[in-house]
Structure formats: C-alpha cells, structure tokens
Length: 103
Image 1 (cartoon, rainbow, N blue to C red):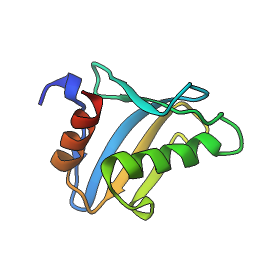
Image 2: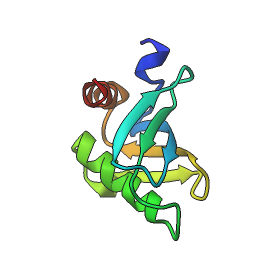
Image 3: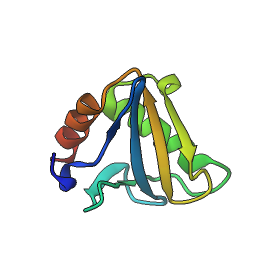
Image 4: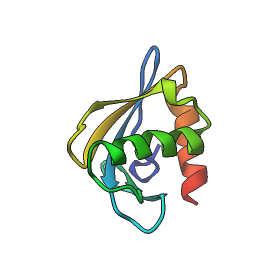
C-alpha cells in the first residue's frame, strides 16, 4: 500500500484512521491523503461545540457505508488532527472505500 492511499492500521476489531479536519469548508469531501497517510477531510460544519466532530462521524458513516455507532473519535476531540476508530470493518475495506471516494 502506498502512503498516498492512506496508512490505516488493521486491528482485531476494526481499523484506525488518522484524520485532519478542515472545518468551515464550502462542502464535505475528502480533500487529500497526505504522505504520512493522514486523510484530510473538509467539512462545512464550524469547529464549535462539537459540530465538526458530529459532522465528521456523519460524513464517514455515509461515505464508508458504516453505522455511526461503529465510528468513534478516540483522540483529538478539540483539535484538527484526530484518530478515529471504526469497528467491525477491516482496514482493507476502509482503504478501498476511501480511495474510491477520493478519485
């Protein structure tokens, strides 16, 4: 897997994604995948009162076709750089869905 396709970590129960959120954008979209595998995601929600975090979970649920209950921000709640856990889906499946949405 090349670094440009994302650097997801497969685990026994799911996958973890490094995400950099860009709040206040004109539309929700995957903007880029950085050299280190971090996925840059633009969100229309402002970074106020958890709105961008809620929008991130909603966006990931839609693009990955995964219930919101399986997605959790495990680090970076008040920062742009976040670590997101996705349960019951392997890293390869997540990788394929993100790459498909990016292109």
